[in-house]
Amino acid sequence: MSQPLDQALFTTERVKTLPHVKVLGVPFVNTSLDTCLSLLKSWISDPQPRTVNFVNAHCLNVAQVDRYYMQVLHDSDLLLPDGSGVKMACRMLGQELEANLNGTDLLPHLCDMLVAENKRLFLLGAAPGVADRMADKLREQWPTLEISGVHHGFIGPEIIDDVLAQINQGTDLLLVAMGVPAQEKWISTYRERLEVPVVMGVGGLFDFYSQRIPRAPGVVRRLGMEWAWRLLMEPRRMFKRYVLGNPSFLMSVRKYGEEAIPGRGLWMKSRSNWRHFRWRVSNWLTPRARRAMDIVGASGVLLVLSPLLLGTVLAIRLESPGPVLFGQERIGRHGKPFKLWKFRSMYIDAEERLRELQAANESEGGVLFKMKQDPRITRVGRIIRKLSIDELPQLWNVLRGEMALVGPRPALAREVALYEARARMRLDATPGLTGLWQVSGRSDLSFEQQIHLDLFYLHRQGIKEDIKLLLRTIPAVLTSRGAY
Image (cartoon, rainbow, N blue to C red; front, side, top):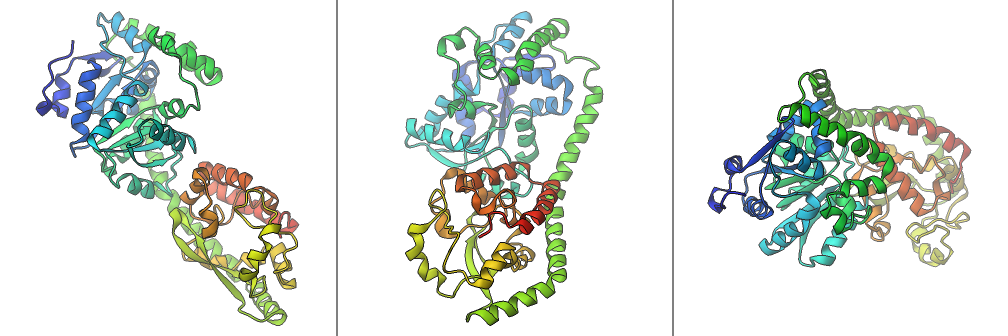
């Protein structure tokens, strides 16, 4: 049984006095649900930063070949047992696990606690849209629960500073759902920059609670067979973990007991440390390298195409009165407005005539306005639009850092006002001169297709991907597909 509770002594040192079990070199607490919740309640109201992680059979298998991950588990302020595999391992070692303290079962208690204590929750992780759906589910059940923010788990180096700043705006409990061991390593890497009392790695919690993946019925969970349900739901992904991993785990426990598997992982340790070092370097270097590429690329294109730019200026002047350049407010990264520049391709009263043409909008969804035979466009405008010459002044926006060579296209404020949660994710990145949907059909694509391609790019963005898209832009411009 767990030791008597003493709220005044619920410090990190106090956790060390709680009963523990050590399996394959990893010690975790063996205590009751009530003790665990009392401890978390005390920590959430304490500014001292603490990290909570969970450990199951799969985690212990991974820790044997990834010693950096094992060290992260050891560094946790609270490590909780999760799953029937850990329970069986404890029995094999002559101990009884007092409670299965998994994140999915803890969540309702945590939400009750946050509401009662007037504390705020942040949801970080999973695929785009999953955390948003989970937040909606939580608000349905706990209407007064304060959710300080949500963000998907695809966080590149370009947006990490902004994500951390968003989290640090009054969050008391941060749940991180990026999968094992990525979430634990992410927490360890950024813990010193997170001004959050309690950070907890929760694995697939968001997928279950958002109902993207149905959780096992209660009777299945009580029988300790939730692993079989997950295997049934995701056979391809879970085959190695459960069908191969669980027997291997139990065999290792029988052979090595409390000790980590000797020898195994010594080579992997150096390899893991090297991978972690490369990841840290990449996080620092990639945004700076992309910015340098933007500056060099934009400057080079402006220099090479200067005769074309001068010719375009002359053609616009000769055809219609009005300024050569058209400045329009667009919404940039994280909703920050900026003035985007184009060569003027419309008559000067184009904005006033827009209301009259809304009924003829040919873009699906009603967010964008597109019309193949738009009467507001000049003759010169049709040519420079077909060849995307009208976009070239945006190279100045690139040099100013308001845009990048590659990224989601910057939207109008009236369009952003109509965005749903999924579409707003495009604002996580610096807007670009070209992007994935621009080389995949441009205006021929529906708004939903454009959003899908932009989010797909955000998950894969990097220098290599940017270079590929820049090369694909050349034939897309020359063929003028979807340009009007």
